[in-house]
Image (cartoon, rainbow, N blue to C red):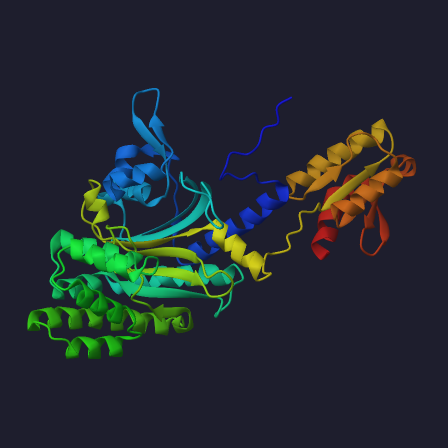
Length: 443
């Protein structure tokens, strides 16, 4: 007989795993609602054209795409941002601004499996649309930080590395790159942490750098600047045209505004200016950020930024936007690494113990009555001996056992046993539901 296995890069969620997954989701959901975000969702199957319009044809190699029975080119969604852009664009004029939405959904990428990266994963996305001010950037970053803290992480175990595509673009322009060349240079900068210096230098030469070695050094020096004051001093001392310097220094004023909001929110211990972060996707237009774990493997936990042009690019009205995505795989790995995975107990509230067919029907009726009151009530289906049922009651974690023996049936009562203390009391069968609810609430 054939043995079927889970497909590569996909996961089975047995009950204990499902409980943990749902706990992570609940923390994300509760934190988002405290920030005033509303939950949305979209279809898991999207038009392939929607994805290529956002990310270019090169993304196709990472997708589970196919032609459906209607002849349409479709794909399992690899992320939620295109769906969000499509949905908001379709109703932009009817939505109150700002739009503050979040979603927790399954996504799919056909790529090589590795630690922290699977082909099927759940992602928490949160976005603010329709607000151009840096308050939106600050709120999204704040939600990211609070979400990680509420999952059990602490300051010093992760950091949000903050950078700026606009500042980089202006700097690249000052080095002689324009238009598509500048966008290409940003792509080179995004990969510099992961490739040899000579490869980055060659890529800059291909983009038309007059002195690739000097250009690479200027970029490398700029990447290492740690704060706004140092960046300002560096730009002031550079040999730049006055208009280029003014543009860069004006952007630093926006930086100060954002940082002042993050400090006011008490987030300064979680934020680090890091100009090595560029975010490779071309649709980012302003501040960008990535959350990294600072213990263990040092992997990325989340990433995002401002994407003011995407809604219009996908056919909607112009609308500023900023948001982030956070996957469940690396988060769970980190919580396990720091021994912060919650110890979840999946237990019954009430276990009903009975003897005989008549008692079973009475217990079953009471179980349904208690369930309708919101209690989790369980009982044995096969009429096992009462001794075995008491053992099952103990292993279920139930707070109380309800006993339906011959004596109880004859007297018209039910014995209620507190499983931790062992104390027992007799309750009239006609008053059972109210009495058990009162005892359960008292603990």
